[in-house]
Image 1 (cartoon, helix red, strand yellow):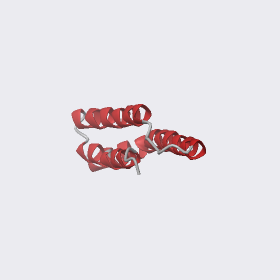
Image 2 (cartoon, one colour; image 1 turned 120 degrees about the horizontal axis):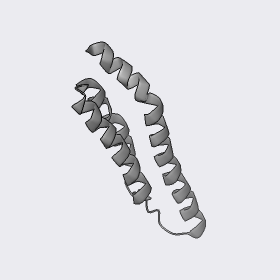
Image 3 (cartoon, helix red, strand yellow; image 1 turned 45 degrees about the vertical axis):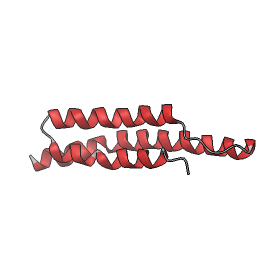
Length: 88
C-alpha cells in the first residue's frame, strides 16, 4: 500500500505543479496589473477557487481509492493556493 501511495504522489506531481503554477500565474498577473493601475490588489478568486477545486477533487478521488497518504499530500498544494487568496 505504501508503494501505491508513493507512485500516486509522484504521478500527480506534474498535475499539482501545473495547477499551482496556474494559480500563481493568475495571482501574479493580477498583482502586476494592479500595480500599473494604482489600485489595491484583489486576488483572482474565481481562478484560484477553480484551482483549489481541482486539487480538492483529486484528493477526494484518492481518498475514495483508499490512497490515504497520497490524499493527505494533496493538502500541500491546497495550502499553497489558499495563501495566494490572501489580499496582502
